[in-house]
Image (tube, rainbow, N blue to C red; front, side):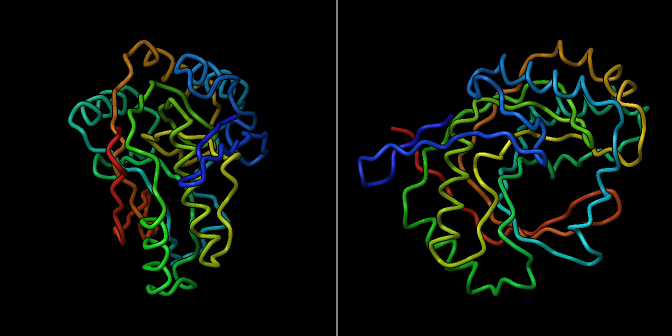
Length: 250
């Protein structure tokens, strides 16, 4: 459960994290702001996976499609060095490694680009800027875990990420765009490599488990980006449409 203050209203809004079969893990962690609890919960969920799936087998991505997303992107030297170390440790899996300029946390899809005129996206960005976003916040990237289709960092705390997502989703609804996925379904994470074929999950656990001894990587979230994204062989590419700075914490 995540609580946030509604801007200018003096009202506290509660966002309930709820189970969802399309999320991973399907159930939210017992304490979404505890790095230890989130990491343990993510690993426990992955420990129950028996088979990896091909990340790229996604019917929702038709050939040639472009989609518009909200992303948090990261490129600090410390994170880049850490990711390279982890990618090297799992290189024998032959997954599709995420490029150092493409490290990101997906907040949510706004819609398919063909259905979103640029003027509507400009209006969305203006709506987001009009209503105070939560202040910038620290985030920890906690090595290392996986889902059914990717190797990834757990991240914590979740409350500021969920709060940011809910404000962005509210802005979409305000200007009449299709609703984004519920904030209660979000499971924040930071990927480093995409699985590109079915294989036993035990092989991935064996490769990843020793990386869990590495220290967390401190990150700072001070902006959110609206991007137009498309897929190429083994990777996502995007162009930034709007970049919105988060307020400085008091």
